[in-house]
Length: 208
Ligand SMILES: Nc1ncnc2c1ncn2[C@@H]1O[C@H](COP(=O)(O)OP(=O)(O)OP(=O)(O)O)[C@@H](O)[C@H]1O
Image 1 (cartoon, rainbow, N blue to C red):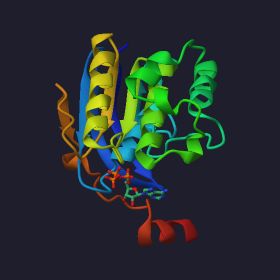
Image 2 (image 1 turned 180 degrees about the vertical axis):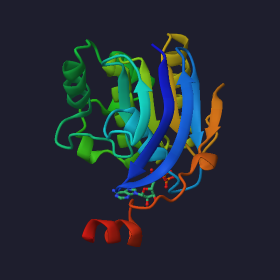
Image 3 (image 1 turned 45 degrees about the vertical axis):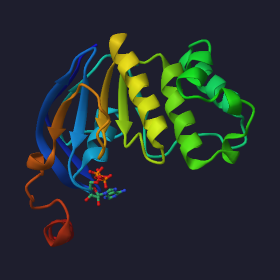
Image 4 (image 1 turned 60 degrees about the horizontal axis):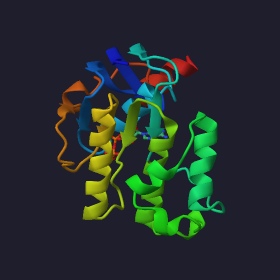
């Protein structure tokens, strides 16, 4: 399933942040998003994942193809590692969590409540959820935060395996993951200021 982004303009808090974005993400491919803090990478990922509407343009992707891993791990702190993974496996209708446990070295932590994991262990569990979704298009926002060097390598291996099985990944990251991937610097796509989209102009118009 190819993800296609066409002439996309996106906004945060009502203010356009990026405009004129066009790219495709074919099966087996990864695309790395780069750009300085605050430029709009998270906003782009949220829009592609369908969590917020675009201002203009289209995101074309098949239904139920996207798995989104945000900044937050989205774990249930009182459930154990295995219960968390089973919870998500049930939601996505997939079976088996062993692959996810193996892929992110979680076997020794399987009965530990997620709330009692270290930051890096929580992140590994959050990422392991991707493997139980069965979804082909991974949208990942700073996936390696809190991970040590070995865990970053583990994550990169999981992405490579996903790509080799025909999956794809759109990843915002500030570090080099060592993946064979195209890089899209979103800096040149910063939206030009528009009247009526915030600041004094927006306030003036809404009060006149
Ligand atoms: N909840 C929010 N409400 C309003 N504006 C926001 C909100 N979250 C972020 N912004 C603003 O939207 C713009 C884009 O933020 P975004 O999080 O997409 O950037 P980013 O490129 O992902 O940054 P970083 O590299 O720091 O994660 C920034 O100017 C930011 O201040």
